[in-house]
Image 1 (tube, one colour):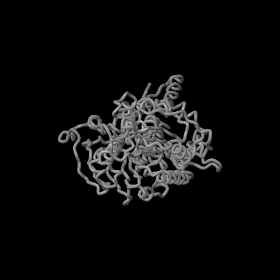
Image 2: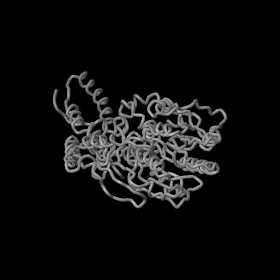
Image 3: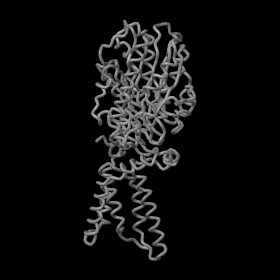
Length: 526
């Protein structure tokens, strides 16, 4: 046994150094150094040498995957059943996004350059210099306090209100700041009136999968124009996650502050459940979807953790408007919403609807049309969805009832992707994925539309619960209360988002992520 140069393995490390400097991967310095040392050991015995080479390939692939921004292996294992549901067409579409011709050509050029220069350049020495560069590049994260803000209306205020700690926050680690945030959020709970004797109004919540501000920008749609006929637009609304099930649970539990991902799947006080609170105030609550809800047990999750009762879904009278990435039918939003409205009858009892639509989900195909990739079909699907919403609004107005309509996306579609995640991948709840345009429209005989009020401060689910609460307490549907009164003192929060084993949090105004409980690293914003 002796020490030797790394040979072709130098190319492996050089590629990783380049990718790391570009922000395309992370770099576990100590694990890579250990692998480097292992590769430097040379065995004279032929069988030991072969075993070493075989182990090196396995470890090299595993370490590259570990350093990548791809989902943890544990996550892939848990999602194996879901991946099996992918249609062949969608699988090939995803593969085309992952395999970049530019990267393949660049690697080819690098390999050719290596073979031409390996005879006179000491690549092992260059690799050692690369490790020194990686050590210099990987600076420690500077912590900063996590704060909450107070917003009043579209004339946004910048007042910062410290959360629990202020003077000592600068000395706290990001993990401690995250815990402080969740402790502060744990104190929040909407206090709805015991009895509501004001002007009754319906609450209709449209929960849209895959619609972020970044997605609208990618197709040339301005959120302020899209929601011009609404009354309120939360331009910096935080969905707090990038997956549908957790997003729906967070929305249905909006009457309490934001919790960690782990706490989502534990029992919660019924006062945290928005629709339970509405039911106690005399609302007839209902749930509708434009899909069967089987994927990732969506229906089971909202039943068990969202506090809502989901009826048996019957789509026999509807034709498919789209087909999902799993080949299952997706139905017209206009058809489902109109059908729900017809079933309500003429009862004066206030209604509360939770509606979930996946019309914008990645991989959907429009029925009766040739196959398109998701980026090509997204503008068509977005336009069709909002045409359906406009039609539904017209039908609501025709009934003459008071309605508070809330459009809140679950998360974005990651339509364009970024350095860390290819288009459609949402494993990391990045700022562009969790920043979703959320809008509110008041409909009623005494309601006058005086233009769109844009709230530019960071809002989240608890803010929506408080908005409904304010609407009740101020008896807004009398038509005598200015809309800025409803928006007064709505609580906002720091932008924190979380998936399983992945957290995104702003530190000193910049987004940082933590994977698998490891170190906090800055998320590239360009």
